[in-house]
Image (cartoon, rainbow over all chains, first blue to last red; front, side):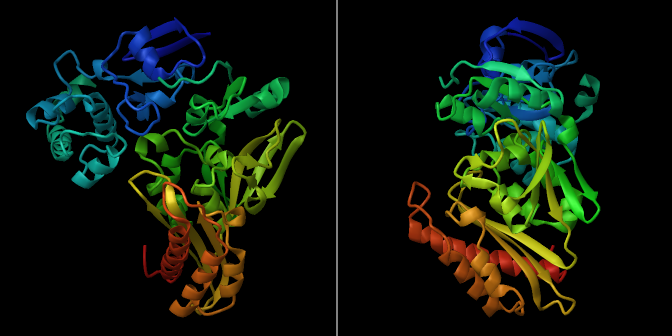
Amino acid sequence: MQVTMTVNGTEVTSEIEPRLLLVHFLRDHLGLTGTHWGCDTSNCGICVVSMDGLPVKSCTVLAAMAGGREIGTVEGMEGDDGLDPVQEGFMQEHGLQCGFCTPAMMITARALLDANPDPTPQEIRQAICGTVCRCTGYENIVRAIRWAAEHPALAEVVA
Amino acid sequence: MQTPAPFEYERATSVGQALALLERYGPEARLVAGGHSLLPMMKLRLADPAYLIDINDLTDLDYIRIDGDSIAIGAMTRHAALLASPVLAEHYPIFADAERVIADPCVRNRGTIGGSLCQADPSEDLPAVASALSATLVIQGTEGSRTVAARGFQTGPYETVVGPGEILTEVRIPIRPGAGSAYEKVERRAGDWGATAGGCVVVLGSDRETVIDVGIGLTAVGAPHFCAEAAEAELRGKPATPENLAAAAARAAAVTKPQTDQRGPADYKRHLAGELTRRALRRAVARARGQEA
């Protein structure tokens, strides 16, 4: 079957099997390997992408179901004027070590800040609780997202 | 890599079209809403539909609204919307209690109330919520629609009264003045299915003491229709004293038939059923009295 969706602002059309998962469509068909692939069972949350602005686990969404939707991945976060404040925050606050969960964490953080530009640490922890990080203990991730909340100017430029 | 077996994909853009597709493909077809229960089962070959009908475009089934003396919830309403709803927060905080501990925000962005009820997993939280609330469910077929009680909707694990050519379209909940409600759950790790959970609705009389009516729902412990009718009968008409609430909770534990599994031994789950029911009753009574948010 044929599927057409918008990925990071660009419309893409591809011939796929109906059973193809969105995570594999992004990685294998489009070469967007920034979206990582973890547990396959929607438990680990490593494969989070945004769909119509909301974070979802792309191992549990069929590429066919994403047809007509707007998909956002980590490759689309950087704007013409540089990194998204969330990306900058992860650098400033050392929000990553191995980097495996980082794209999912940053996509989730961007969606959170779009809905709630000044979240409390507790709200941040609730927002990211669907994604597992085995390195940081989450402290620096929470700080990184708070950093982005306190430096939103770049987001306005990017938007 | 876990991938479902091959199937044909169709997308419905209206309830009528979804019904027509179900009629065309027969029992080999399955509807998919959020897909967060069905797709994992398809990956494990526990479900193997030949045709998958995607109903995510049925946005006209995505609503929470007051309709006369009921709250009407469209079957495609996402968990995230149930958690955030001011209407449900005002009338039935049991929803926010339960939704807050269903999976995680990403999953709640996809999963729907209709999918949750139709999945009929014994550990699913919303069937117990619907049972506690004495909800009625609207099922649409090509010949028209019918309504069934939530307490007769699930006929067994992963089985409901929805026929092969039918769709659950709406959940209706009676608004009860003087009601308080709450949900309590114990899970082994954040976002997991509950080892045991229970929720209840208590309607107090004008004296704010007499229990006019009560609904008690139980999750993951094998309670018939996800409820504890004997415990409700025990409490109905009595004052909402701590002793009476505890006695009803003990009766609720007695109706359970939990199974020992990786989430705990049976006697532990039975103990939880009693204790969580007691806590939920206590909180529901406090809310009915306006003493607790």
